[in-house]
Structure formats: C-alpha cells, structure tokens
Image (cartoon, rainbow, N blue to C red; front, side):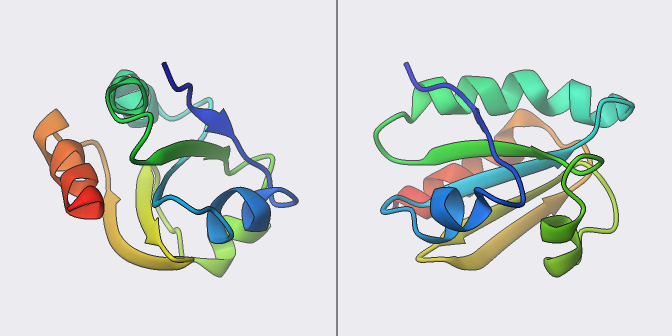
Length: 108
C-alpha cells in the first residue's frame, strides 16, 4: 500500500518533476480545515493507485517557494503532473469523485 509522501522545496524536483510516474501533489497547511477534509481522500487514492500514480503533499507554510512558482493562491490546491508538466488543477475542497476523475485521467 502506497503512502502519501511529504515533499519539500528541496525534494520537489526529484520527487515530482523527475518522477517516472504521474504525480498528484496536495498543497496544504496545518490550520486549513478544508485541507484536513480532503486528506483522507488523498490518502485513500494513494492506497488505491500505488502502481499508477505517485501522490505527495507539501506544507505551504514550511515550503513557500514551490507553491509560489506554481501560482498556488488558495489551499487546498491539488496539481496533477505528467512528465514534469502541470496537466490539471483542483482548488478547494471537492467531492471524492473530482479527485478520482483527476487520477483516472492521469492513468488513462
């Protein structure tokens, strides 16, 4: 079962941009209630698609550079990367189906 990996500004390039699999990154913060609301969904998706997609999260308070580089202005923001390029974005708490659809598009 795959776990959600914590990434930092320092590990972002290796973990996300150079990944051989598509990557979904959840930008979050401790104080963000909607972030906590989607956390179980993100964790479940990591367990459901361990071989197809790498799922990571980044605390924006501890790592301000990467969210700034990708224009993250609100959290939670979830970005889907394929081949080191952003291919989709979800901002705000959404139903599980929105995140499942994002994963399915990535692995199609």
